[in-house]
Image (cartoon, rainbow, N blue to C red; front, side, top):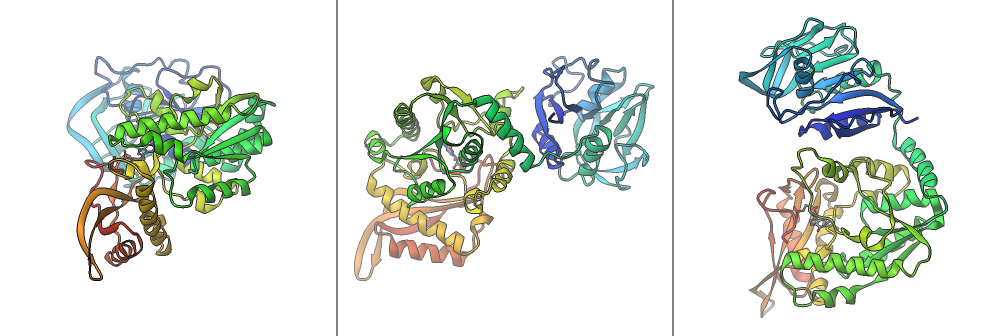
Length: 507
Ligand code: XMP
Protein backbone atom coordinates (compact mmCIF):
# COMPACT_ATOMS: atom_id res chain seq x y z
CA UNK A 1 0.00 0.00 0.00
CA UNK A 2 1.43 3.38 -1.06
CA UNK A 3 1.76 5.58 2.03
CA UNK A 4 0.81 9.16 1.37
CA UNK A 5 0.31 12.58 2.85
CA UNK A 6 -2.65 14.55 1.54
CA UNK A 7 -2.19 18.29 1.11
CA UNK A 8 -5.51 20.11 1.04
CA UNK A 9 -5.03 23.16 -1.14
CA UNK A 10 -6.67 26.40 -0.07
CA UNK A 11 -5.04 28.23 -2.99
CA UNK A 12 -1.68 29.33 -1.60
CA UNK A 13 1.19 30.14 -3.94
CA UNK A 14 3.28 27.82 -1.75
CA UNK A 15 1.15 24.67 -1.99
CA UNK A 16 3.34 23.07 -4.68
CA UNK A 17 6.37 23.85 -2.60
CA UNK A 18 4.91 21.96 0.38
CA UNK A 19 4.48 18.94 -1.89
CA UNK A 20 8.04 19.19 -3.17
CA UNK A 21 9.44 19.41 0.34
CA UNK A 22 7.45 16.41 1.54
CA UNK A 23 8.62 14.43 -1.48
CA UNK A 24 12.19 15.47 -0.82
CA UNK A 25 11.69 13.58 2.44
CA UNK A 26 11.06 10.50 0.29
CA UNK A 27 7.40 10.55 1.18
CA UNK A 28 4.73 10.46 -1.46
CA UNK A 29 2.09 13.19 -1.25
CA UNK A 30 -0.77 14.49 -3.32
CA UNK A 31 -2.30 17.94 -3.60
CA UNK A 32 -6.08 17.97 -3.66
CA UNK A 33 -8.59 20.83 -3.62
CA UNK A 34 -9.43 21.82 -0.01
CA UNK A 35 -12.88 20.21 -0.17
CA UNK A 36 -11.95 16.98 -1.97
CA UNK A 37 -10.49 14.84 0.79
CA UNK A 38 -10.57 11.22 -0.47
CA UNK A 39 -12.42 9.65 2.47
CA UNK A 40 -11.98 5.90 2.62
CA UNK A 41 -8.69 5.89 0.71
CA UNK A 42 -6.11 3.56 2.18
CA UNK A 43 -2.54 4.55 2.88
CA UNK A 44 -3.24 8.12 4.04
CA UNK A 45 -0.83 8.84 6.89
CA UNK A 46 -1.43 12.52 7.48
CA UNK A 47 -2.98 15.74 6.21
CA UNK A 48 -1.50 19.19 5.62
CA UNK A 49 -3.76 22.23 5.29
CA UNK A 50 -2.14 24.82 3.01
CA UNK A 51 -2.13 28.59 3.11
CA UNK A 52 -4.60 30.69 1.15
CA UNK A 53 -4.98 34.12 -0.42
CA UNK A 54 -8.15 34.50 1.66
CA UNK A 55 -8.56 35.64 5.23
CA UNK A 56 -10.64 33.31 7.43
CA UNK A 57 -12.83 36.33 8.17
CA UNK A 58 -13.52 36.92 4.50
CA UNK A 59 -17.15 36.11 3.55
CA UNK A 60 -15.74 34.11 0.61
CA UNK A 61 -13.20 32.25 2.75
CA UNK A 62 -12.80 28.60 1.82
CA UNK A 63 -14.48 26.53 4.49
CA UNK A 64 -14.27 22.80 5.01
CA UNK A 65 -15.66 20.47 7.66
CA UNK A 66 -12.68 18.77 9.30
CA UNK A 67 -14.64 16.62 11.75
CA UNK A 68 -13.89 13.42 9.81
CA UNK A 69 -10.22 14.31 9.45
CA UNK A 70 -9.11 15.78 12.79
CA UNK A 71 -8.49 13.08 15.37
CA UNK A 72 -8.45 10.40 12.70
CA UNK A 73 -5.26 11.52 10.91
CA UNK A 74 -2.38 13.69 12.05
CA UNK A 75 -2.99 17.24 10.78
CA UNK A 76 -0.62 20.16 10.20
CA UNK A 77 -2.15 23.53 9.34
CA UNK A 78 0.18 26.03 7.70
CA UNK A 79 -0.61 29.78 7.73
CA UNK A 80 -4.30 29.93 6.65
CA UNK A 81 -4.44 26.23 7.58
CA UNK A 82 -3.44 27.12 11.15
CA UNK A 83 -5.74 30.15 11.27
CA UNK A 84 -8.59 28.02 9.96
CA UNK A 85 -8.01 25.41 12.70
CA UNK A 86 -8.04 28.13 15.37
CA UNK A 87 -10.98 30.06 13.91
CA UNK A 88 -13.19 26.99 13.35
CA UNK A 89 -12.58 25.86 16.96
CA UNK A 90 -13.65 29.15 18.56
CA UNK A 91 -10.35 31.06 18.47
CA UNK A 92 -9.90 34.56 17.15
CA UNK A 93 -8.09 35.61 13.98
CA UNK A 94 -7.70 39.31 13.31
CA UNK A 95 -6.20 41.54 10.74
CA UNK A 96 -3.09 43.02 12.35
CA UNK A 97 -1.53 46.44 11.89
CA UNK A 98 1.97 45.14 11.36
CA UNK A 99 1.57 42.68 8.54
CA UNK A 100 4.36 40.20 8.85
CA UNK A 101 6.15 39.31 5.64
CA UNK A 102 9.55 37.73 5.24
CA UNK A 103 12.08 36.73 7.84
CA UNK A 104 11.15 36.35 11.51
CA UNK A 105 12.83 34.52 14.36
CA UNK A 106 11.39 32.03 16.78
CA UNK A 107 11.62 33.86 20.10
CA UNK A 108 10.50 30.78 21.95
CA UNK A 109 9.46 27.21 21.22
CA UNK A 110 8.77 24.16 23.32
CA UNK A 111 11.76 21.86 22.81
CA UNK A 112 9.72 18.87 23.99
CA UNK A 113 6.95 19.38 21.46
CA UNK A 114 7.01 16.62 18.81
CA UNK A 115 6.74 19.07 15.93
CA UNK A 116 9.47 21.43 17.18
CA UNK A 117 11.90 18.82 18.48
CA UNK A 118 15.42 19.62 17.27
CA UNK A 119 14.50 23.11 15.98
CA UNK A 120 17.22 25.59 16.98
CA UNK A 121 16.66 28.51 19.34
CA UNK A 122 16.07 31.75 17.47
CA UNK A 123 15.63 29.80 14.23
CA UNK A 124 14.65 31.87 11.17
CA UNK A 125 11.14 31.25 9.88
CA UNK A 126 9.40 32.75 6.88
CA UNK A 127 6.17 34.65 7.46
CA UNK A 128 3.69 35.78 4.86
CA UNK A 129 0.37 36.83 6.24
CA UNK A 130 -1.78 39.85 6.96
CA UNK A 131 -3.95 38.13 9.60
CA UNK A 132 -2.86 36.71 12.88
CA UNK A 133 -4.35 34.41 15.50
CA UNK A 134 -4.99 36.60 18.54
CA UNK A 135 -6.70 34.04 20.75
CA UNK A 136 -6.56 30.26 20.81
CA UNK A 137 -9.24 28.05 22.31
CA UNK A 138 -8.63 26.43 25.69
CA UNK A 139 -7.58 23.03 24.47
CA UNK A 140 -4.93 24.61 22.20
CA UNK A 141 -1.46 24.65 23.61
CA UNK A 142 0.96 27.36 22.53
CA UNK A 143 4.23 25.78 21.39
CA UNK A 144 6.05 28.58 19.51
CA UNK A 145 6.16 32.37 19.25
CA UNK A 146 8.12 34.91 17.22
CA UNK A 147 8.85 38.47 18.33
CA UNK A 148 5.84 39.80 16.45
CA UNK A 149 3.50 36.84 16.52
CA UNK A 150 2.70 35.27 19.84
CA UNK A 151 0.65 32.38 18.47
CA UNK A 152 3.21 31.24 15.89
CA UNK A 153 2.67 27.55 16.60
CA UNK A 154 0.13 25.50 18.55
CA UNK A 155 -0.75 21.92 19.31
CA UNK A 156 -4.30 20.75 19.99
CA UNK A 157 -4.41 18.68 23.14
CA UNK A 158 -5.63 15.11 22.77
CA UNK A 159 -5.14 15.21 18.98
CA UNK A 160 -2.24 14.84 16.62
CA UNK A 161 -3.04 18.27 15.25
CA UNK A 162 -0.66 21.23 14.95
CA UNK A 163 -0.77 24.65 13.36
CA UNK A 164 2.04 27.02 12.43
CA UNK A 165 1.53 30.52 11.13
CA UNK A 166 4.88 30.59 9.36
CA UNK A 167 5.90 28.65 6.24
CA UNK A 168 8.21 25.70 7.00
CA UNK A 169 8.17 24.73 3.30
CA UNK A 170 9.93 27.91 2.17
CA UNK A 171 13.68 27.43 1.80
CA UNK A 172 14.42 30.51 3.93
CA UNK A 173 12.81 28.82 6.93
CA UNK A 174 16.01 27.46 8.46
CA UNK A 175 14.66 24.43 10.26
CA UNK A 176 11.64 24.01 8.01
CA UNK A 177 12.81 20.65 6.74
CA UNK A 178 13.41 19.47 10.30
CA UNK A 179 9.90 20.49 11.26
CA UNK A 180 8.30 18.85 8.21
CA UNK A 181 10.34 15.74 8.86
CA UNK A 182 9.13 15.65 12.46
CA UNK A 183 5.59 15.76 11.13
CA UNK A 184 6.04 13.24 8.34
CA UNK A 185 8.23 10.70 10.11
CA UNK A 186 7.58 11.00 13.85
CA UNK A 187 3.99 12.19 13.94
CA UNK A 188 2.56 10.50 10.83
CA UNK A 189 4.87 7.48 11.05
CA UNK A 190 5.77 7.47 7.35
CA UNK A 191 8.52 5.01 6.40
CA UNK A 192 10.17 7.56 4.06
CA UNK A 193 10.85 4.92 1.46
CA UNK A 194 9.43 6.63 -1.63
CA UNK A 195 12.38 6.81 -4.01
CA UNK A 196 12.81 6.84 -7.80
CA UNK A 197 13.46 3.09 -7.63
CA UNK A 198 10.26 2.41 -5.68
CA UNK A 199 8.34 4.73 -8.01
CA UNK A 200 9.57 2.75 -11.01
CA UNK A 201 8.71 -0.57 -9.44
CA UNK A 202 5.17 0.50 -8.45
CA UNK A 203 4.51 2.29 -11.73
CA UNK A 204 5.67 -0.59 -13.89
CA UNK A 205 3.42 -2.95 -11.91
CA UNK A 206 0.40 -0.68 -12.19
CA UNK A 207 0.99 0.02 -15.91
CA UNK A 208 1.00 -3.72 -16.54
CA UNK A 209 -2.24 -4.08 -14.67
CA UNK A 210 -3.86 -1.08 -16.34
CA UNK A 211 -2.81 -1.89 -19.91
CA UNK A 212 -2.67 -5.69 -19.91
CA UNK A 213 -1.87 -6.94 -23.41
CA UNK A 214 -3.20 -3.86 -25.19
CA UNK A 215 -1.10 -1.88 -27.63
CA UNK A 216 0.03 1.65 -26.89
CA UNK A 217 1.34 4.49 -29.03
CA UNK A 218 3.47 7.38 -27.75
CA UNK A 219 4.76 10.54 -29.41
CA UNK A 220 8.42 11.12 -28.60
CA UNK A 221 9.83 14.62 -28.87
CA UNK A 222 13.46 14.10 -27.88
CA UNK A 223 12.72 15.91 -24.60
CA UNK A 224 13.00 14.56 -21.09
CA UNK A 225 9.35 13.90 -20.25
CA UNK A 226 8.34 11.89 -23.29
CA UNK A 227 11.61 9.96 -23.21
CA UNK A 228 11.20 8.94 -19.57
CA UNK A 229 7.56 8.03 -20.22
CA UNK A 230 8.69 5.89 -23.17
CA UNK A 231 11.39 4.03 -21.26
CA UNK A 232 9.04 3.40 -18.33
CA UNK A 233 6.31 2.04 -20.60
CA UNK A 234 8.82 -0.03 -22.48
CA UNK A 235 9.89 -1.60 -19.21
CA UNK A 236 6.25 -2.39 -18.41
CA UNK A 237 4.88 -3.62 -21.74
CA UNK A 238 7.89 -4.07 -24.05
CA UNK A 239 7.08 -4.39 -27.73
CA UNK A 240 3.41 -3.53 -27.22
CA UNK A 241 4.63 0.07 -27.11
CA UNK A 242 5.27 1.82 -30.41
CA UNK A 243 6.80 5.29 -30.37
CA UNK A 244 6.55 7.85 -33.14
CA UNK A 245 9.15 10.57 -33.57
CA UNK A 246 8.33 13.19 -36.20
CA UNK A 247 10.92 15.28 -38.03
CA UNK A 248 9.03 18.50 -38.65
CA UNK A 249 12.07 20.10 -40.28
CA UNK A 250 12.32 22.49 -37.34
CA UNK A 251 14.61 20.50 -35.08
CA UNK A 252 18.21 21.35 -34.26
CA UNK A 253 21.12 20.37 -36.48
CA UNK A 254 21.40 16.55 -36.74
CA UNK A 255 18.88 16.22 -33.92
CA UNK A 256 16.51 13.84 -35.67
CA UNK A 257 19.22 11.32 -36.52
CA UNK A 258 21.02 11.46 -33.18
CA UNK A 259 17.90 11.31 -31.01
CA UNK A 260 16.52 8.45 -33.10
CA UNK A 261 19.74 6.55 -32.68
CA UNK A 262 19.65 7.15 -28.91
CA UNK A 263 16.11 5.83 -28.73
CA UNK A 264 17.01 2.72 -30.66
CA UNK A 265 19.97 2.13 -28.35
CA UNK A 266 17.61 2.34 -25.41
CA UNK A 267 15.62 -0.51 -26.89
CA UNK A 268 12.57 1.55 -27.80
CA UNK A 269 10.47 0.51 -30.73
CA UNK A 270 10.49 3.83 -32.66
CA UNK A 271 9.16 4.88 -36.01
CA UNK A 272 10.96 7.97 -37.29
CA UNK A 273 8.85 9.98 -39.72
CA UNK A 274 10.42 12.45 -42.11
CA UNK A 275 7.66 15.03 -42.49
CA UNK A 276 9.83 18.03 -43.31
CA UNK A 277 8.15 18.75 -46.62
CA UNK A 278 4.67 18.56 -45.12
CA UNK A 279 5.56 21.26 -42.56
CA UNK A 280 7.55 23.48 -44.93
CA UNK A 281 4.75 23.57 -47.44
CA UNK A 282 2.07 24.21 -44.79
CA UNK A 283 4.17 27.05 -43.35
CA UNK A 284 5.10 28.66 -46.66
CA UNK A 285 4.66 32.42 -46.55
CA UNK A 286 3.17 32.43 -43.03
CA UNK A 287 4.62 35.13 -40.77
CA UNK A 288 2.15 35.49 -37.91
CA UNK A 289 3.53 33.66 -34.80
CA UNK A 290 0.25 32.22 -33.51
CA UNK A 291 -0.66 31.04 -36.99
CA UNK A 292 2.69 29.26 -37.27
CA UNK A 293 2.09 27.51 -33.95
CA UNK A 294 -1.40 26.41 -35.02
CA UNK A 295 -0.16 25.07 -38.34
CA UNK A 296 2.61 23.13 -36.62
CA UNK A 297 0.25 21.74 -33.95
CA UNK A 298 -2.22 20.63 -36.60
CA UNK A 299 0.53 19.23 -38.82
CA UNK A 300 1.81 17.19 -35.94
CA UNK A 301 -1.63 15.78 -35.14
CA UNK A 302 -2.24 14.89 -38.80
CA UNK A 303 1.10 13.13 -39.23
CA UNK A 304 0.85 11.31 -35.93
CA UNK A 305 -2.71 10.21 -36.65
CA UNK A 306 -1.74 9.02 -40.12
CA UNK A 307 1.20 6.97 -38.79
CA UNK A 308 -0.73 5.58 -35.84
CA UNK A 309 -3.45 4.38 -38.20
CA UNK A 310 -0.92 2.22 -39.97
CA UNK A 311 -0.54 0.31 -36.71
CA UNK A 312 -3.17 -2.24 -35.81
CA UNK A 313 -5.14 -2.67 -32.61
CA UNK A 314 -3.88 0.41 -30.78
CA UNK A 315 -6.01 1.03 -27.66
CA UNK A 316 -4.01 3.61 -25.71
CA UNK A 317 -2.30 6.92 -26.31
CA UNK A 318 0.52 7.57 -23.84
CA UNK A 319 1.47 11.13 -22.90
CA UNK A 320 4.33 12.63 -20.92
CA UNK A 321 2.07 14.94 -18.87
CA UNK A 322 3.72 15.92 -15.58
CA UNK A 323 2.37 17.09 -12.20
CA UNK A 324 2.43 20.87 -12.65
CA UNK A 325 0.10 20.49 -15.67
CA UNK A 326 -2.24 18.33 -13.62
CA UNK A 327 -2.24 20.70 -10.65
CA UNK A 328 -2.82 23.67 -12.91
CA UNK A 329 -5.89 22.07 -14.34
CA UNK A 330 -7.13 21.36 -10.78
CA UNK A 331 -6.16 24.81 -9.53
CA UNK A 332 -8.86 26.16 -7.27
CA UNK A 333 -8.09 29.79 -7.99
CA UNK A 334 -7.58 29.05 -11.68
CA UNK A 335 -4.97 31.77 -12.03
CA UNK A 336 -2.12 30.04 -13.83
CA UNK A 337 -2.81 28.19 -17.02
CA UNK A 338 0.03 27.24 -19.33
CA UNK A 339 -0.60 27.91 -22.93
CA UNK A 340 1.86 25.55 -24.59
CA UNK A 341 -0.21 22.50 -25.35
CA UNK A 342 1.50 21.12 -28.43
CA UNK A 343 -0.72 18.12 -28.92
CA UNK A 344 -4.01 19.46 -27.57
CA UNK A 345 -6.81 17.86 -29.53
CA UNK A 346 -4.95 14.63 -30.24
CA UNK A 347 -6.79 12.39 -27.73
CA UNK A 348 -10.20 13.55 -28.99
CA UNK A 349 -9.26 13.03 -32.60
CA UNK A 350 -7.83 9.57 -32.10
CA UNK A 351 -10.47 8.22 -29.74
CA UNK A 352 -7.97 6.30 -27.64
CA UNK A 353 -7.71 5.77 -23.90
CA UNK A 354 -5.05 7.93 -22.25
CA UNK A 355 -2.20 6.68 -20.10
CA UNK A 356 0.09 9.19 -18.36
CA UNK A 357 2.76 7.45 -16.28
CA UNK A 358 4.41 10.68 -15.07
CA UNK A 359 1.31 12.64 -14.15
CA UNK A 360 2.21 12.73 -10.47
CA UNK A 361 5.86 13.79 -10.80
CA UNK A 362 7.59 17.15 -10.73
CA UNK A 363 10.19 17.88 -13.41
CA UNK A 364 13.19 17.23 -11.17
CA UNK A 365 11.60 13.94 -10.08
CA UNK A 366 11.15 12.97 -13.74
CA UNK A 367 14.88 13.56 -14.15
CA UNK A 368 15.71 11.43 -11.11
CA UNK A 369 13.49 8.63 -12.39
CA UNK A 370 15.13 8.95 -15.81
CA UNK A 371 18.59 8.56 -14.29
CA UNK A 372 17.43 5.57 -12.28
CA UNK A 373 16.14 4.05 -15.54
CA UNK A 374 19.63 4.41 -16.96
CA UNK A 375 18.87 7.20 -19.45
CA UNK A 376 22.07 9.12 -20.21
CA UNK A 377 22.80 12.38 -18.37
CA UNK A 378 23.20 14.02 -21.73
CA UNK A 379 19.58 13.36 -22.56
CA UNK A 380 18.26 14.01 -19.04
CA UNK A 381 20.08 17.33 -18.78
CA UNK A 382 18.94 18.69 -22.13
CA UNK A 383 17.65 22.23 -22.20
CA UNK A 384 13.94 22.65 -22.81
CA UNK A 385 13.07 23.13 -26.47
CA UNK A 386 9.73 24.48 -27.68
CA UNK A 387 7.30 22.15 -29.44
CA UNK A 388 7.15 24.37 -32.56
CA UNK A 389 10.95 24.21 -32.63
CA UNK A 390 12.98 26.64 -34.69
CA UNK A 391 9.79 28.05 -36.23
CA UNK A 392 9.40 30.36 -33.23
CA UNK A 393 13.05 31.39 -33.56
CA UNK A 394 12.86 32.38 -37.23
CA UNK A 395 11.06 35.70 -37.18
CA UNK A 396 8.92 36.06 -40.26
CA UNK A 397 8.27 33.35 -42.80
CA UNK A 398 10.05 30.01 -42.81
CA UNK A 399 12.11 28.55 -45.64
CA UNK A 400 14.40 25.50 -45.63
CA UNK A 401 17.36 27.83 -46.26
CA UNK A 402 16.57 29.95 -43.17
CA UNK A 403 16.27 26.74 -41.14
CA UNK A 404 19.71 25.67 -42.36
CA UNK A 405 21.28 29.02 -41.43
CA UNK A 406 19.71 28.96 -37.98
CA UNK A 407 20.67 25.32 -37.36
CA UNK A 408 24.31 26.11 -38.13
CA UNK A 409 24.42 29.19 -35.91
CA UNK A 410 22.56 27.42 -33.09
CA UNK A 411 24.93 24.47 -33.30
CA UNK A 412 27.97 26.72 -32.83
CA UNK A 413 26.40 28.46 -29.82
CA UNK A 414 25.22 25.28 -28.09
CA UNK A 415 28.45 23.37 -28.78
CA UNK A 416 30.38 26.39 -27.47
CA UNK A 417 28.36 26.32 -24.24
CA UNK A 418 29.08 22.60 -23.86
CA UNK A 419 32.80 22.96 -24.60
CA UNK A 420 33.15 25.79 -22.09
CA UNK A 421 31.22 24.07 -19.28
CA UNK A 422 28.48 26.64 -19.51
CA UNK A 423 25.67 24.44 -20.86
CA UNK A 424 24.57 23.13 -17.46
CA UNK A 425 24.83 26.58 -15.92
CA UNK A 426 22.14 28.05 -18.15
CA UNK A 427 18.56 26.88 -18.12
CA UNK A 428 17.92 27.29 -21.81
CA UNK A 429 19.80 28.72 -24.78
CA UNK A 430 19.33 29.16 -28.49
CA UNK A 431 19.77 31.47 -31.45
CA UNK A 432 17.12 33.60 -33.13
CA UNK A 433 17.26 34.48 -36.82
CA UNK A 434 16.19 38.09 -37.22
CA UNK A 435 14.42 39.44 -40.28
CA UNK A 436 16.99 42.21 -40.43
CA UNK A 437 19.80 42.64 -42.92
CA UNK A 438 22.71 44.94 -42.36
CA UNK A 439 25.88 45.98 -44.10
CA UNK A 440 29.19 44.37 -43.28
CA UNK A 441 32.59 43.90 -44.81
CA UNK A 442 34.35 40.60 -45.29
CA UNK A 443 37.78 40.66 -46.90
CA UNK A 444 37.40 43.38 -49.51
CA UNK A 445 33.76 42.65 -50.11
CA UNK A 446 30.69 44.48 -48.92
CA UNK A 447 28.11 42.09 -47.41
CA UNK A 448 24.43 42.64 -46.83
CA UNK A 449 23.30 39.74 -44.69
CA UNK A 450 21.21 38.66 -41.70
CA UNK A 451 21.62 39.37 -38.02
CA UNK A 452 21.12 36.66 -35.39
CA UNK A 453 20.48 37.08 -31.66
CA UNK A 454 21.90 34.77 -29.00
CA UNK A 455 19.57 34.04 -26.08
CA UNK A 456 20.59 32.29 -22.86
CA UNK A 457 18.53 32.44 -19.68
CA UNK A 458 18.54 31.37 -16.06
CA UNK A 459 15.25 30.11 -14.72
CA UNK A 460 13.74 27.41 -12.55
CA UNK A 461 10.48 26.75 -14.33
CA UNK A 462 10.39 28.95 -17.42
CA UNK A 463 7.71 31.17 -15.89
CA UNK A 464 10.22 33.87 -15.03
CA UNK A 465 13.76 34.15 -16.34
CA UNK A 466 16.81 36.35 -16.27
CA UNK A 467 19.34 36.68 -19.08
CA UNK A 468 22.51 34.75 -18.39
CA UNK A 469 25.61 36.84 -17.73
CA UNK A 470 27.85 34.83 -20.06
CA UNK A 471 31.52 35.86 -20.19
CA UNK A 472 32.34 38.50 -22.84
CA UNK A 473 35.27 36.42 -24.15
CA UNK A 474 32.94 33.50 -24.72
CA UNK A 475 30.34 35.67 -26.46
CA UNK A 476 33.06 37.23 -28.60
CA UNK A 477 34.34 33.82 -29.69
CA UNK A 478 30.86 32.53 -30.53
CA UNK A 479 30.09 35.68 -32.50
CA UNK A 480 33.31 35.32 -34.47
CA UNK A 481 32.70 31.66 -35.20
CA UNK A 482 29.15 32.26 -36.36
CA UNK A 483 30.07 35.13 -38.66
CA UNK A 484 33.03 33.27 -40.11
CA UNK A 485 31.37 29.91 -40.56
CA UNK A 486 27.70 30.53 -41.24
CA UNK A 487 27.07 31.82 -44.69
CA UNK A 488 24.27 34.37 -44.60
CA UNK A 489 25.04 35.89 -41.18
CA UNK A 490 27.24 38.95 -40.72
CA UNK A 491 26.10 40.30 -37.33
CA UNK A 492 25.49 38.77 -33.88
CA UNK A 493 23.74 40.45 -30.94
CA UNK A 494 23.10 39.23 -27.39
CA UNK A 495 19.60 39.42 -25.89
CA UNK A 496 19.73 40.99 -22.42
CA UNK A 497 15.99 41.03 -21.65
CA UNK A 498 14.45 39.26 -18.68
CA UNK A 499 11.03 37.63 -18.44
CA UNK A 500 8.82 39.42 -17.64
CA UNK A 501 8.46 41.73 -19.47
CA UNK A 502 10.00 39.82 -22.39
CA UNK A 503 9.50 36.11 -22.97
CA UNK A 504 12.17 33.47 -23.46
CA UNK A 505 11.25 32.76 -27.09
CA UNK A 506 10.91 35.70 -29.42
CA UNK A 507 7.63 34.49 -30.90
P1 XMP B 1 8.19 31.74 -23.23
O1 XMP B 1 8.65 32.08 -24.61
O2 XMP B 1 6.69 31.75 -23.09
O3 XMP B 1 8.64 30.25 -23.00
O4 XMP B 1 8.86 32.57 -22.18
C1 XMP B 1 8.68 29.60 -21.75
C2 XMP B 1 9.20 28.20 -21.97
O5 XMP B 1 8.28 27.44 -22.77
C3 XMP B 1 8.89 27.04 -23.99
N1 XMP B 1 7.90 27.22 -25.05
C4 XMP B 1 7.18 26.22 -25.56
N2 XMP B 1 7.21 24.92 -25.30
N3 XMP B 1 5.53 24.56 -26.91
C5 XMP B 1 6.40 24.09 -25.98
O6 XMP B 1 6.46 22.89 -25.76
C6 XMP B 1 5.44 25.88 -27.22
O7 XMP B 1 4.65 26.29 -28.06
C7 XMP B 1 6.32 26.75 -26.51
N4 XMP B 1 6.53 28.08 -26.55
C8 XMP B 1 7.50 28.35 -25.63
C9 XMP B 1 10.08 27.93 -24.17
O8 XMP B 1 11.06 27.32 -24.98
C10 XMP B 1 10.52 28.14 -22.74
O9 XMP B 1 11.23 27.02 -22.26
